Image (tube, rainbow, N blue to C red; front, side):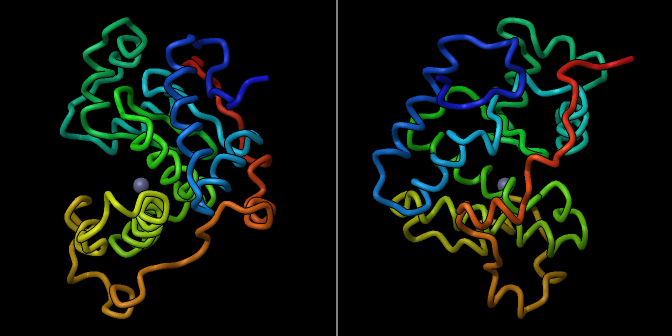
Length: 218
Ligand SMILES: [Zn+2]
């Protein structure tokens, strides 16, 4: 039995599966509550995980829009799939992970605990439908979604975040205008849902998410 579902099940390889399995093992070895729930969510197929080179065509367009500095073009989608692709490298250089709907994409080359942390982060985004709420009321909406996801990471891997002011970190990392975020939000930045529990997934109803073709359909 597969330990996780891929976005593009037809396009897989043993190296990638091993890479993900090591992170799943790191989640399994953790005594943190959020690690257990995240692992269970992945094993139950609530989310699908793949590498950045397996972005669906529409997800590639979204990444393109989110990363204007990379100057990606339409034609680059075809290059993404090539071995040793410079396009794939450029995207992986800019982001560790990406999500849309229940699809999670991760860059290669993260150590198992870092990758496990990325999975905790992205599963939290899926649980909270970040692709819907993120852009509602910028910059506050993006701040809330990222703060929650990074808080989730910190619950899993406290050591890596020791001494980091998470509010400052999110504002800096995402180049948000602090003056446009209400002081009340900055004072109480954590909003639900935090843990990917059975109850939280029932509310999220991920099975109703629309499926997207892996490739571009003309
Ligand atoms: Zn995020």
